Length: 375
Ligand SMILES: CC(=O)SCCNC(=O)CCNC(=O)[C@H](O)C(C)(C)COP(=O)(O)OP(=O)(O)OC[C@H]1O[C@@H](n2cnc3c(N)ncnc32)[C@H](O)[C@@H]1OP(=O)(O)O
Ligand SMILES: O=C([O-])CC(=O)C(=O)O
Image (cartoon, rainbow, N blue to C red; front, top):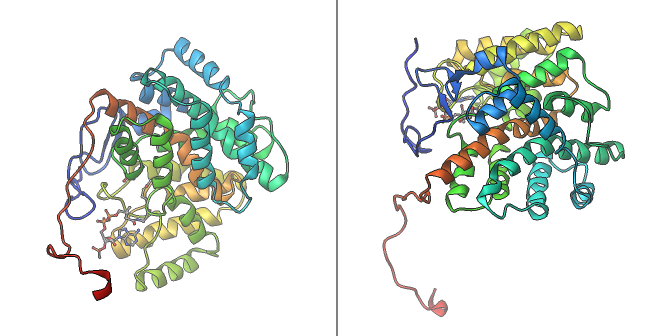
């Protein structure tokens, strides 16, 4: 078993910022559990709706609870007219993460959280509505169509692909989306979740917490890495080309997106799972170039830097094989991580003290204001 990564230095690394009962990350160097269940076990033996229920409500559902939950979520997919009008005004060249942020914020105006007793309803509503509003905006701004966001798909992953492509996905694509949503659902005190918790600690509303979290997830050092990884691999012709491109980047000391992790030491347990599905998609697709160059990148990064793929790297090829436009990669992460964010907000609220750390002052010594005419 590997040792835990040495955690110290800037970025609050290694400092406990609170307690959580939601997940463990890299407790023994690698490994990820949601409420005590290994993510691999969940990926193999549960669906995303079961995992969302586990994260938001504390236990895996019974069949009756799951059926009722799926029916409930299905009934919450519609968008208010005012939100559609806002989405229609956002230009096609906007970043979809900005669309998510605006959509979440707008829904907070239309369906505000007036009391914390509404927190579970609001979380379920966001979980159901996120795929609707990213696809509504995308299809309107790119194809000029106003889609109907209430599909009959039982699961969120299939529903997303259906809205995006205008037809129900294959069983393989629906399965991969479902697993992907499970992998991205929760990850302890990562940057976006911590953003949500800081916001929650002021006793703010759920939509504000989630809107802030979306902003944090957008950056390429966090969720935005899956898009950046796609941009890296998309033009690699073959394994040799992949090695040349990466060596050049390493010589220039560029960051390679989709590699490394703040907590894990020698692997991210989500990588092996999505990598396997990417390989299956490549085979089904009949063109495995993206998969092969990704494997070559993985080998070279380990050989040269002892850096491993995080959850984002093989998601790039997997999503591409399912015809998902690159700029929608990080919004899918949002559709999943909403579960973790919302559960952390609820956990923070249940035992709250405002999060307000201190800073080490490194500025100038105390001084007097010089009258403006003498400066
Ligand atoms: C779902 C997710 O959010 S997973 C993370 C997604 N983000 C990325 O893939 C972006 C690329 N990766 C990174 O920038 C980093 O690895 C982070 C942000 C994830 C973690 O950052 P840190 O905890 O500061 O990394 P860590 O302490 O392990 O870095 C050790 C060294 O490896 C280098 N390093 C880490 N990751 C990379 C990388 N992807 N490419 C090149 N060098 C890297 C660091 O620059 C550092 O070098 P230094 O000691 O010379 O400064
Ligand atoms: O934990 C982190 O720092 C980033 C990450 O992998 C995640 O949020 O899924």
